[in-house]
Length: 226
Length: 145
View (cartoon, one colour):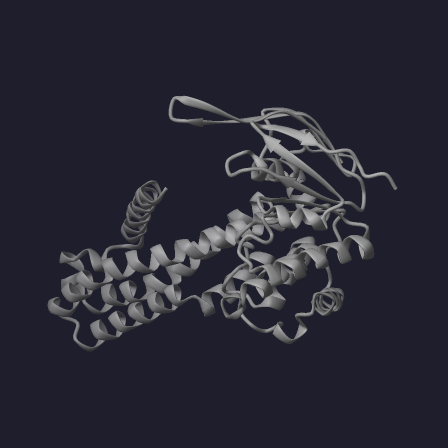
């Protein structure tokens, strides 16, 4: 996955705030990358651009061979459904659907047959350790469980890239540690590229490569020697 | 079954806003059936507007969380449009029958009160309420942020 000279700015009244200033980055298949930076540094914007939820003003984003700039809204929807999964900070679960139904949602959109859907949802809930909570509503779950449901929903379509926005921000350290270990397990089991943004330096101990955003520019640390 | 229908049916049956709207609408319809004169119609008129507004505001919260979730997991703009249409149809199904009943049973009240207005007028009322609600929510958002 590649980002080439990505720029993004927002209008705030009469001012223009430049959030990203020519970001270049490469991510390798099957790595856990952590992007670190203070609030308002553009971490979430960068993640949303990779997910195709926002478009850059300039620059190119290439995910799994797809040039996101060349896709219309329908194309980007297809990418989010099959190639890239995004987990927002507040998990983005539908409160009126059960855990099972929330996890099933991407498969319904993809038009997967009922038998296959049931098998996949059951499998991913077992993998994530939440089968016993399948019929609970999100409001009945703890923060850690909600996060795991969001991960299950992101994982059910077996995407190439998994993006997580502050995945540990609403969790105590014990739950945060478990979530980070789960990400490492997903990387090992599925060779999924995982990119997470965080302001918690402890989380970076669990990533393969860390980067930092300062003033809209990404500073990439080199890969550790094998 | 389409994804929109699937989510809509589950949301409608589990969303307190829709349930409240359906119940209040049915209660008002029942009241007007029992005593089809001007007083209950007027009462209904006084009750139904805030009740509608409250339920629409509550429904909007569900709207936004569902749209957001759908977008994240790959729902395309067509799916969003279908869902919005489905919600509008459900709201119409909840609100319109009591009004139609009133207009049939109570011709006198029908002439004097908006309650018994034809569906087009009710649709306009709904759109006005929707616009008010949007404006209120925008105001809240600005205040909060």
